[in-house]
Length: 226
Image 1 (cartoon, rainbow, N blue to C red):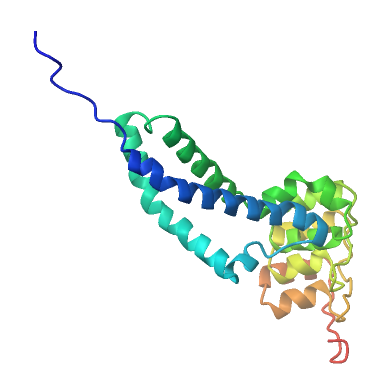
Image 2 (tube, rainbow, N blue to C red; image 1 turned 60 degrees about the horizontal axis):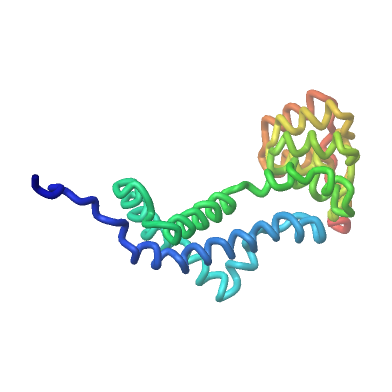
């Protein structure tokens, strides 16, 4: 009887070793961005997530390395499927860490805010969170913040309300929701502008027509106020 005619080749160890720095970088980036979207957001209000990273040399290098890592993970996954494994504990840990980190990076900022609605609604920046959610068209976040006690006409740092924000970005569904919750359709911000004036200035025709149909007035502030 002859010996086996075929022997399965093991998973290339160099792929697992090559993935160590990529996995560590992905994990550090995930930790950094999750921190921005949670702790830093709770303390300082809405963030431009990733902005500081893109203006820091170390951050830029890390982001470039993350993009390059896709050249590693694709053949690694293919090889893992072919070899039915990643060559033992090291390869499994490296690939798992990388996958978890990348998935964490893909979680939208609005999802983190929705998950911690109660904390945001009771922070000094509650009005800012509401106006940002309204401007971004995140109806679920708007509903959650309102249900958690944030006033529908709460004023952001600029004196604008959620309706101002939704009107300026053309979020018709959010505008409808806010009016149903009792938003002041002619609320004036610190620049002396009403939500309808915002919609008109940004060319949001559908929203402007909707607001007019509900009794909105186009009120513009003076040059001095601006």
